[in-house]
Image (cartoon, rainbow, N blue to C red; front, side, top):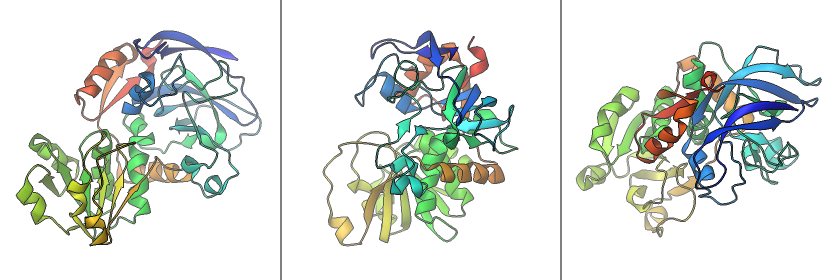
Amino acid sequence: MSTTSCYAAQSDQSLLEPFKIERRKIGANDVQIAIEFCGVCHSDIHVVKNEWGGSHYPVVPGHEIIGKVTALGGDVSHLKIGQRVGVGYMGGSCQVCTSCKSGLEQYCLEGFSPIFNAPSKDVGGFTYGGYSKSIVVDKHFVLIFPMGLDPAGAAPLLCAGITTYSPLKHWGVKPGMTVGIIGLGGLGHMGVKLSHAMGAKTIMITSSKSKAADAIKLGADEVLISTDPVAMQNMNNQFDFLLNTIPGPHDYNHYMNLLKVDGNMCIVGSIGPTAELNTEAMVYGRRSIAGSLVGGIKETQEMLYFCAKHQIVSEIEMIKMDQINVAYERILKNDVKYRFVIDMSSLH
């Protein structure tokens, strides 16, 4: 075991504060990583505040991890000491179910284990995440970091990047298609960049006219203001695919008629109950709604290489570890363009 510095929340009402945790002894299949950068995701806040239920304190968040290998278990042969690697939302899965064997660990039939706040044989009984100096991770869930990518800007690729890449890839986004990205935030801005790189005509759909200029800079071909009923009606039946990144409950019916016949809208932002769904637009256009959760390890590695090829990273604001509570407040006010990343060298 080894002791490492971190920031932790002791209850759903407490701020994140300096803390010490014990990391498990390195097993044969383990990789120890000194963390350089960790992205800050809204889901970190959900768990800290126990908004999804089941939070076990102390909570050490963080699941967009970039760092360098400092030690290897005896059965780890594909990595070397000093190599830069990444770790995302998943830290474990059963590895034997049909989903896991298909490279879809995020849909593990036994339930995958998040990199933080998951029951574990680790010291303390639960996993602790990336707001820390070091971490020990099973080799299967450690990703090779491609040369040529900025490591700080790449940290959010391990959540926001793969969460948007996976559905775009699954639904075959390619040149000749028209894709709408609904909502311009941490997920949405990655969706625009990736859809553009895949060659699709990419249209940002937002309620905020003030975000139009940013959307174009990020790679959008056009901007559709969702609060303009005439503009929305004029775009009916124009989209092959919609990626809906809005983080909270909202009316999905508002967007369904934008889809062509056989078009799909995929939900990656809001999880849980929502407004009543009117199936008329679905029945009369053979349109569908689906959801998607991060991506499997093989696909996440593929996404990193894709981003390296196209020089895609997240738009970030770097912060020090002791600025995390202010960062949380700003995220809740949508006051970040578009992702905070913690410089972990600021944690001592």
